[in-house]
Image (cartoon, rainbow, N blue to C red):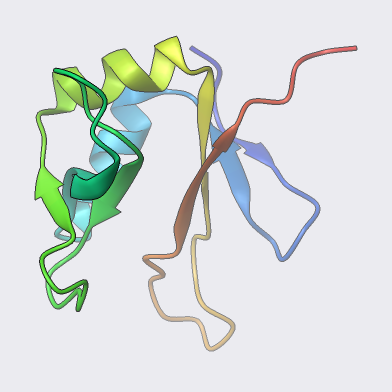
Length: 103
């Protein structure tokens, strides 16, 4: 797995490293989830990270890290995140994006 690399936009970073993703998410109180209405057969639909206090009206359901990373790899996804907010606070910002393939 590749380590984190800087993303030129907004000081964010991108990684595909499973351990790094798990550590970042869990250290901020989050867990893997999927959007309920997007389920595909037996697998999860759209992947998300859920944090305490999220006001999604029950739209997310928890999934295991195993299920999350299986789909993460199958769909060739990457984890975009921000270390700190502009005011210097620990950031929970993240987005699951399509991996950039080398030219």
